[in-house]
Amino acid sequence: MNEPLISVIMPSYNSESYIREAIDSALSQTYKRFELIVIDDCSDDSTPDIVREYCERDERVHFLANEKNLGAAGTRNRGLDEAKGDYIAFLDSDDIWHSDKLAKQLRLLSASGKSLCYSSYSLTAENGAKCGADYTVPSSTDFEHLLRENCISPSTVLISREALGAHRFLSEYMHEDYVLWLDLLRDGCACVGCAEVLADYRLHPGSKSANKLISASNRWKIYRKYLKLPLFKSLGCFSVYAVKAFRKYRKGR
Image (tube, rainbow, N blue to C red; front, side, top):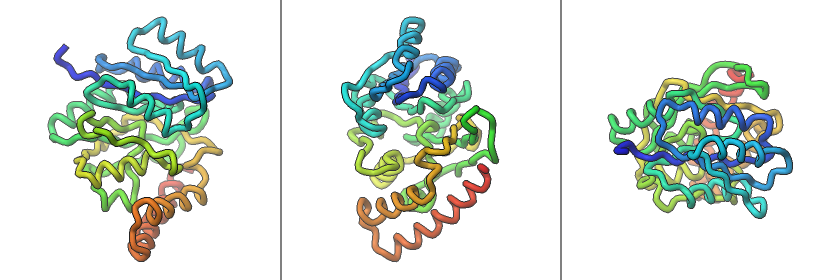
């Protein structure tokens, strides 16, 4: 019982095709002391029934249902408000963790003295088949580096509750996770990256990340409207982002 409790936040919306794999990957962790909080955002498929099945089989699984659609940001925030853990992890309902993900990240955080750990991940198609090269993360990142390349994917994050504090996801921006990482790093949160692949990220043709023009427009909006960066710095950051995003996209084809 001296082991820290980890709260795993999983938002879900019409996830019946994938959520079993996601939940199974959490329950298969070698690190056992965690709670899995699944928050459904008004699904109209069988997602809630699937999650309730898991609640009956494993007391670590908890189910919440939004009364109205809150979107990814609001749904994750509700999970954070309910979380009881010393550490917080995020797992999207269509992604998959490798079995030693939590254990390895806890050890890395302890050894490094850092507050947030992120990892490399593989890219998979809708059917779960691997597509393209793995995305390998740097061993460390900071605010300035993150402006040019977002190396932190939500399903790879483990962060101490103390470091997260009152920070929350902002629904005003499409890539709400990126805004949160920027806020944390700007406020001094120290990060460590695990080069080992610990998660599988599922690509969808219609997803936010798949629409490059929308993603680029949102990145520019974050630079200029949210961060209020000067024009020339925004242009410099955006040019590096565009090149790296193109290379990543080509690898994942």
